[in-house]
Length: 187
Length: 107
Image (tube, rainbow over all chains, first blue to last red; front, side):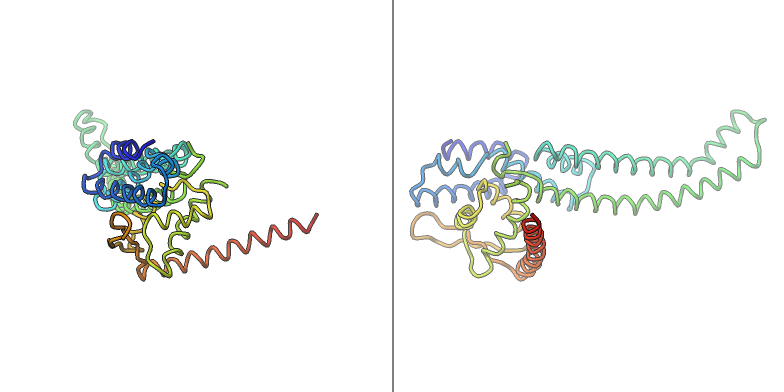
């Protein structure tokens, strides 16, 4: 691979990064090639020891998406970050996607049950409107108790979600720094 | 050697090379690949990550033979982190060495 091919491939794999960031990355590699050729190495030799530009790009993208989650933690950003880390290698598919689906299910279930509990008096009201004969005081008290519990669960989920997300982010970062990406013998 | 294993240690290698002097990217990569077989390109994503974590800063300096070079300079935070990593490494490698010694002698 020539320098031009290497930089070209790297550049096109880095789509999604800001042009400023991309420029800076390409500059680093440009410099690497320049320093290598001062030492008398050919472009092919240098590109060969650098490794696959796609793998390098994957690693850069994973870091970038993780950073974005840290500044603005929208659902879209989180999913993009998870996706980027998974892209680093097959191994990550299992150790990242598995926990992610598990956590997402727990968070979703928590919110869903909290909200369902809160609106349970409302559901009872609808029930009474539809079947006026079937009213029992027990149902009213029970639904009010559920409503109270629902408020607790929802408040708990609010903080719980934040903590879980922060922990999961740390886990993702740990993966980027540890699991394969750009080292030799990992095509 | 195991890819994941090497990658974990790469951070320590980069930081320790910058402990006594500032170096430029190519120099760092060569120093490491002289000792350990790595895919050289993977050092750059690591450098960017460590810079963003404020373990070092960069500056450009003109060179006599070619374009200007980006130098990496360890910050105080980076130095503290390096000492932490070195301590961990010492404990870890001593443990492994001890096990190897016992394993070899038990034959």
